[in-house]
Image (tube, rainbow, N blue to C red; front, side, top):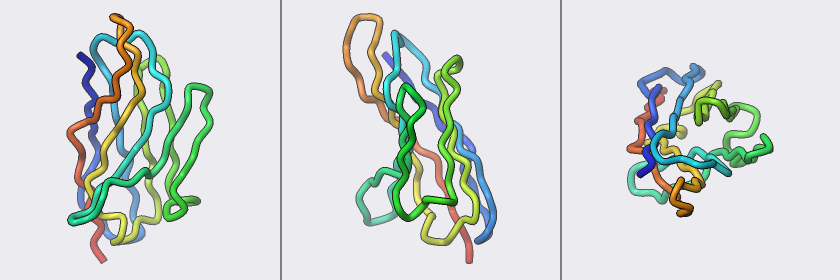
Length: 120
């Protein structure tokens, strides 16, 4: 079993900042890509940012220049620094990871999500 636990969400005014964290634990042999997704009410879950094993990053156009994804390989963790937040960033943010377990299974677990609310 592999678990992802997110933290750091909350209520912030437009223009403010938040930093999300996600830590993976359990039967982990290795982790390839890790990513942040978000889902607003009534909408599909969309990719926000991802980071590869080698540190290459990708971002959704809507967050480029405002959000930064980073990774701590020793802690099996990723972070999302969110600056200049806008009301349209309001969503539940989910962590996702491409995990190889000690039993050689390829897993793609999701965290439970953390709510980010940006007030205007």
